[in-house]
Image (spheres, rainbow, N blue to C red):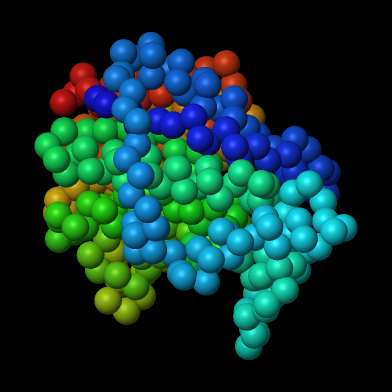
Amino acid sequence: MKAVYTELHRSHDPQFFLVRGVVQRTTEQPERADRLLAGLKAGRHDLVAPTIFGQGPRARIHSPEYLRFLEEAWDAWSALGDSGPEMIANVHPVRNAATYPTHVVGRLGWHAADTACPIGPGTWAAACAATDVAVTAAQLVMDGEDASYALCRPPGHHAYRDIAGGFCILNNSAVAAAQLKLKHERVAILDVDVHHGNGTQGIFYERPDVLTVSIHADPVFFYPYVWGYAHERGVGPGLGANLNIPLPKGTGDDDYIKAIGEAEKTIRAFAPGALVVALGLDASEHDPLAGLAVTTDGFRRIGAAIARLGLPTVFVQEGGYLSEILGANLTATLGGFEEAR
């Protein structure tokens, strides 16, 4: 399996992370990519540089005002003269009969769901590079590869059409799905990140042509808290095209594989032409966010279960934070997929 990667992700190096009132160094660090690269090397995957696709694929998913804000944000923030080293919103208008603001501080709040997506001088460049990585991986599959892997950083599945959140700026998995839609009538997204893929759900919630399935730690006790419940099934034409499978804290391998089996039934019934896997590795028993307890062998079983769907598959990297076993879990997931194919 070919893996798409660029060093441009390093221009995004966020520092701020607010956890229960305590400011910490964020877990979404450039070192994540180094550990994932080690996992790719162990699996003997060939690295491919991304093609630069420009704004088009991003504009299929994100609003023009959001893309313009992200492109202009750092310069406008810096011009204030008294701003900090990162853009962190202090206003969250929740858009209740609100007016779109013109001031950069107001626009920052408008486009931020939380404080976990600080914007720095290189964030826009890194986010654009991540979408190029995802689209390149999708194009490889469209051109005949059985499967591909996109090492995207920053991740994307918490980003809505015009809102950043949860370390995510642009929704790489959604952008990859939109690229696959150029060839396939229906596309499915299977999100195995420990957190619910709320941004992806929101983007496609009214659409019948993209199935969104998320297996995640129950939002009763885990981020994002207000999305990801089992009763959320889509609305209008999209009713029934969204499936959430929330899991109890500490869920291990066997119960996780049962959840994959439940997802498989829905995906097969939807009959997509291709699959995007939003590949969070933070369901690991060793992940610092400690929601679920999947072992390295469990990730191998997850990869094998995905392979049995028999679909052209694009793996898009989402979460998975700094632990000694992060790279091994990636090796196991992709290896399990390849062995079962």
